[in-house]
Amino acid sequence: MLPGRYAVTFTGLQRPAGRTEIVQVTPYRSTYANCAVLCWTSLAASLRANVECCDAAGNFADSQFEMLVIA
Image 1 (cartoon, rainbow, N blue to C red):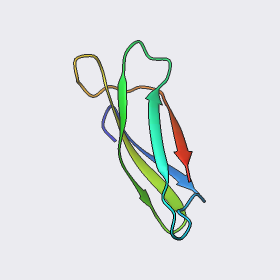
Image 2: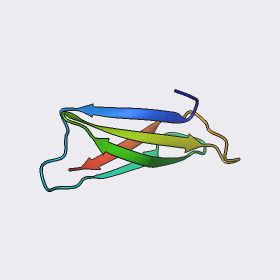
Image 3: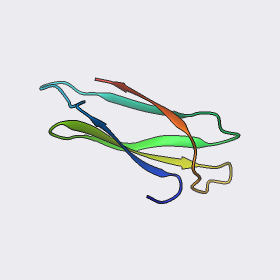
């Protein structure tokens, strides 16, 4: 992956039939970063979320982050 871009896979966490999930992200221990979930996909046996983080100037930058998934 490129700097500031992440694909996070939660193996064993898939969408139950007829349900939806919510995925949220927030930067963690960063001097400044803005992180956002671009999209997420429920696969046969996992959930995959794509995240991008940027610095104060809007450039992609590596950052630690926390994710919350409500399924």
